[in-house]
Image (cartoon, helix red, strand yellow):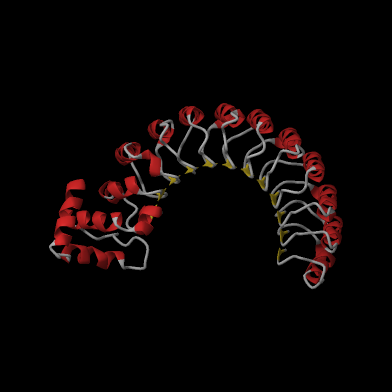
Length: 379
């Protein structure tokens, strides 16, 4: 590819831009997958690489799906990928061959890369081991890594975390949702989180097969190094009330700066909800988004939550309570809190609860109350 690029520099000096103009017709398309179904010649592929390498916009953020989410396109555009700062290769059907070529290219020039999205591919544990070799390179400055639904098990997770532990200071966002690290993988992740050099701000682990044991290790690690984390996603795991009590100890730590907490589908009952809200009342000033959907706090839990919303130090703006066993009594407490001047809430989701007709009328009237700051209400 480098020889082809030099050739195009020569052609430009001779004022021959015919091939460049040919590929520009494809690049000017406004639809996604601009090259899907297009059979480019080798010369046209080289011209395309030349054009993209001279595009500051593409090198800042390269998304393969804009051209063609295929391994062939990936292999042809590797010189562009290698030079890019943010790379999105999600949903691109990359096989082991493409994965090996990709990681080899990235390892040859790791210092430019700051964001990498490989979600919805199937590298499996073997592919993640190759990725780990990139991550442990001291020249790697990756800040954001997304590996959603990548068929990563305990073995792959172990390799990934080992690499991150050897070079932890740059990564600020890690998304391992919809993989299966299990409790053993999460224990290894916990060792990374305990490292004082770890600067993770966003940790997304939804539907990651984490039980009470893994949750306990995770929260223990976060308590030892709580000041960086601003977003935690544990949706679809099973910490249960015991895990939520441990989480509550983290939330009440004055060094905890968590702003967004996702706990839908986490088997949290009234007891766990009570512990959670009690902790938030002790340290309410940072959290702006809370998702408790598909748990069972019931009316008693919602009453405690309502008291939190009335606290002038509480900065909650978005609250998800979808399908939370809330009846008329809990709904009334919530409405009373939202009528207070102190509530900052702007979004509330109460779908699939049972406020009753009277509760629905009160909720509808709530939007017209001048003291209410709600802008979005789902019932």
